[in-house]
Image (cartoon, rainbow, N blue to C red; front, side, top):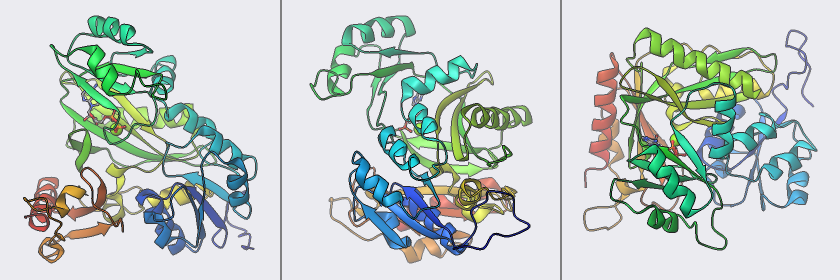
Length: 398
Ligand code: ADP
Ligand code: MG
């Protein structure tokens, strides 16, 4: 049993306690590494045994997310549970919450795991988002496309990530085909979709922030994000935005966390329009790929911040020590031009100054699969981006 520190805030969960994380991906792995460094035990709850967090935790529980008995058994002995992945049934979070505090609350997961619910939350509370319609049939999609105009993008309401479950709709594209391609006609396919206007934005940014048990918030500086084929490619910070846009993005994020009642870490993705408006794209109720550079660039990483927030400890300083950039390493990097497997040249990438390598321990590289990332610090953000992209080119040169 952990000691109760007299100077620590009431209700805090101290080192020596056992933290649970729902989901066994790389975000869970990096959380586990941060928590164990701070003296916590970490138990991972995953539906697959061979997951990135398995090698970094004290105990792995493998079972089905829709099995309440498995979840209740896994939760016994844990002091708090958080999550690293929102595509789990909200019933899973409720089954855990019957046994142990779950932070953020399962209701936050319920709202943010579904694009239709998330957009209705944003609209209800006056947070501007992209023009959109919720559609439940091919005919509704056709009507919505006529109202919104083209280009548009059709997204499944639930279970999408890294661009999965999305179809772009250009001027001549038939809505019925997109509907069919995303499984709208399949008996066990998705029932609900969101169709959005496709924005010709100025840039994409995101803000990772934490909210503690006492309601205090701490935001990291916004990152500028470049996506390729709907998947995050490069994030960098400072995001070189006007002071007004920067302040507005941080303030919107803090208000969203407060309105949702988040205890933990969340990330808000934004589009910045060419006329300087800031529209919410989506909310992730967890650490985020665009926040990985906080490991090297900030006084507290997003993962340590998640530990602090869910344990009721004081939030750490989000001060940035140096300009930084992060480049994702997707499965593509492991294939040569003939399609043969070839280990990337890590020594070449690491020969550049200020470059750090993170590999998630995934055994099978696949197209579009996030296998790791590189981070580079630099004297300016332009140089950090140059370093990290050059390091990736050197690693993946085949
Ligand atoms: P995911 O859950 O896969 O991250 P997003 O809705 O964030 O889904 O979409 C992934 C990326 O696709 C976005 O970061 C952006 O680059 C692009 N995208 C998505 N929706 C739009 C849109 N309405 N207009 C322009 N680009 C978009
Ligand atoms: Mg996104």
